Length: 210
Length: 197
Image (tube, rainbow over all chains, first blue to last red; front, top):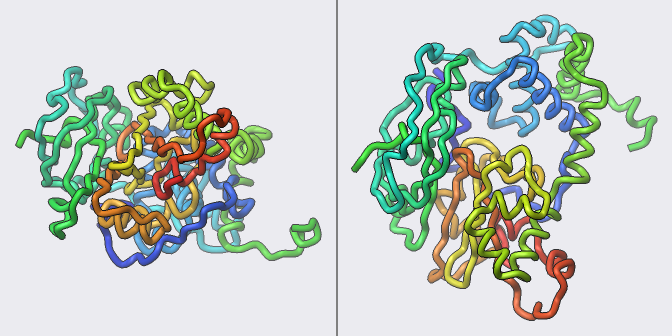
């Protein structure tokens, strides 16, 4: 099952130090900008929404995701979308590559047929206390797992944008306001740290009143 | 890499896969001529942290601009000619002696391309994404940016449409510098929030 995909990394432990370098090239290998351009080309050709584009990466097999570089994620998503939309076949790709060509896993969520009406008016304002829905959808979402069920305070109301959970799964669209919600890190992690606030940007339907 | 190396080095499996997809898509007319070269050139030469540094220097030099920048980042950054993909909704967060801001994208790699370019590899890799929301004080210290306990830390997870830029504090001893001189002091990492100037 690919519910709660491996990409949702906030708060996971055991990864060790950040491989930090103050200066590094934009691209490390010449195949990286090619992979980048190919995903851009495929997404354009199949008219993939941002949600469908990201979900193609998130559906990668977790072991492959964690052991491959960022631009290998892009390559895998480009190939997956190209095969799913009939631009190429998996066997053509493997024949040309001379070996196995791992793809992302299948979409598990059903297509969204009825997106429901747009939400024009923000339900919440700056200073309101809100709670994030405790909810584990089988498809794409931009609601990180580490804030689900947690209470926070709205610090900014942004514009109305297409809900990723809907646009990733078909042609239906719904627009909703988004909010920046502030969480106390001590409440997120229960570890007593002080003076640390984590802000997460969330769509209207991810939230409920406290 | 010399030409002879280029032709004799065996391709890695990932290079073979990239070449396979590129060939098939090109045969089907889905990769316009020059498209790959144009994307490479744009992000290697035109779009990068030198753009964000100009925004920061202007904010340091011009208090009215700084007010506009903090009130509407997208519009104020457009005044300097910067915008485009991943830059439609820019929010600028200001560091002070009492508050330190830092940006992350726990779900993927969201980053303000028009002002910072493409993100460095460590920004997109699991350790940074996993740890910055959980133990930012410890991680910042580990990355060479220790903060006194009394400094409040604000982490911004770029999970929807807004992309963030940190406005670092103007360093002491810079009175009288020109905007170009100020911009030269501004690092990419200070605008992500993993360094102070």
